[in-house]
Image (tube, rainbow, N blue to C red; front, side, top):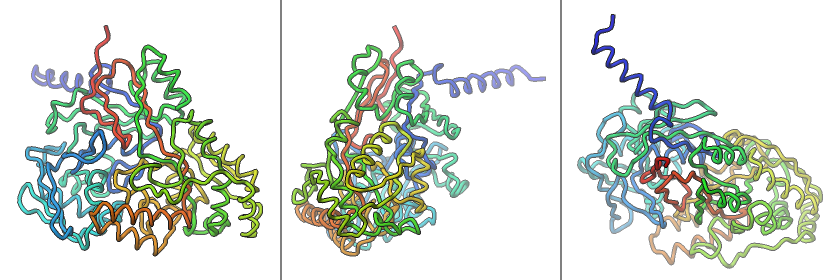
Length: 508
């Protein structure tokens, strides 16, 4: 028999479970993602959709400002040493992890040491210059470098700057991704693979006055049409990556708001040049064949047909016209005759390869346009559509010849080129490696002088474009759709959805 107090506790537990399980009963938001995230561990994760979930769950040492640049988050300030070989962070006081454990300098050391040394960590290359992490006192950490490393602040504004509870890490180890415990505004509740990820508000969050939502439910929906239908029907409150072809019509819907903003993300074709047997093809082994493929493409036509002309065609990891883009290597115009001549020179007038694309309709359309355009130059391209996480896993294992991928972009230029083309980069699926390019990138990382960095990254762009391990296609404009009831949404240049300040206004 259950006493009165027992019945009261049981009833409270049931009510809590209903609130958590059903966002409609609380100020919950339902978000449609364009892919199912991979493992929810910042050390192991590599997907863009995973970063969307981390944006609500895991604060970082350094924040990204809405207008670009960096701002305080878990660290309130940071200072370089005179020789550029040490970065000292002052930490925010009063922060606790979602399991109630305190956030302090010791916790920062545990996380950074894990990111830079754990066998499963994909952050090792980003933190390679870190020689030591020293807690100076409870709220001060000194990061000592083996050499100056200007991109470190930017690195700490992404996964490598996300802090997890040391207690939870000790308990779960490499399995932390099944129940991550961070120091962010929303804590993990559950995940049903392929269906949803549920978070709830963390009431002890350091910036809790900026959090108005009780729950967040992420639903992976790779099909843009399905996401749109769910938004229009009211089954979703917010969706990412509204197809540009649908943006104008969606703006006319009185129940929906469309927000768009410039993005540092870009799409590219990446090639397997040295990762297993599938690298042994003309497209993988000869830069002339890759150059021919690029010359067969009309980026402007692809942008106009697939993206309503909203994106920015380009051939470099940096957006055309921005500081680090190299104007000495402009985007080449389509030239089918020159493409054919390059293929003849390479001795492969009709090269064949398989191009992996995600199973989204727009990306498949882009793949079909590439297939048709390149076919005019003699290429025989077969398309294989995969779910985004499956594509990434296949490419990471070397099980591909070429793949269309998205890079969400970073504010520091180093991560836009080095993440894909550095010899030991975690996104270097095709195992491209150039000693000359790595040497220039190393020089660029070792100085904080802006003019010197510009010159070096432009030099790196020239080396990259000579070997062409990837073909950059265009840079994004982020487009979100949301119900009118969603208020307070702020776009960021990295395209990630921060939910601080977001409210669901009551109907009526």
